[in-house]
Figure 1 (tube, rainbow, N blue to C red):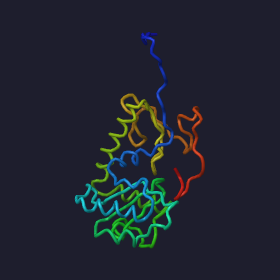
Figure 2: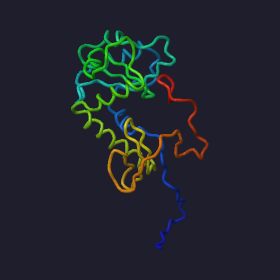
Figure 3: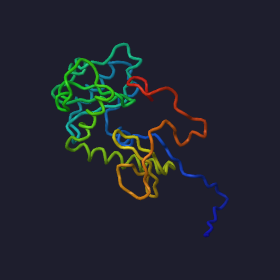
Figure 4: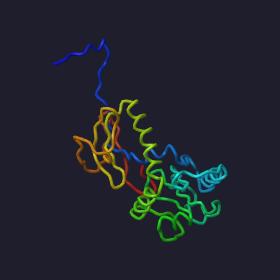
Amino acid sequence: MAELDGGDRWVLPGLWDHHVHVRQWGLVRSRLDLQGTGGVAEALERVRRRLAEGGLPSSGVITGWGHRPATWAQDPTVADLDGVTTQVPVVLISGDGHHGWLNTPALDLLGAPRRAGVVAEGEWFAVYERLSALPGAHEEAEAGVALALADALARGVVGITDLEFGRRGRTGATGSPSTCRRSGPGWASTPRGWTRSWRRRGCAPVGRCGPRTDW
């Protein structure tokens, strides 16, 4: 067996992250940032500024991510979003990924019945799949995923368990931490779970999934 001289350096195993939504992770880089918004008004102001900048992504839909309305004084409504948008479809995805706040043009475009509030849970997951299938959406997502995976590899992450909606799998990597959506040798399905690869350091998720509180 070949030996490598480490020159008194430490050798550590590569890190695995066992709960990643890879496509979401990559797309965050191109989405309107709604993290830290303290209420409906602040989120709408960010949408208003984005619309004022002009230009649309290749999908034709302005997509935001990161708001968490569990602590907001009022729930987000379609009417609120319609009040600051035009005919441009706008989809705002909660930070936990369990609901979408859509304006009326987006509801119509993505085949969701009109309603007063957000689209949540199972209905939202189906709507999200249609959002992902829009022309130009795939290329937008792949560009973000490539950047995210390169960043992960640079940080010592060599494998991930992808829990993206409709796609689950465990993967290892030599050139980059791949995802279960890309075929390759040695990949196997894995049950959905809450465990992360760094749990031995005492880190474990607390709580339950939910449209307002999942982290």
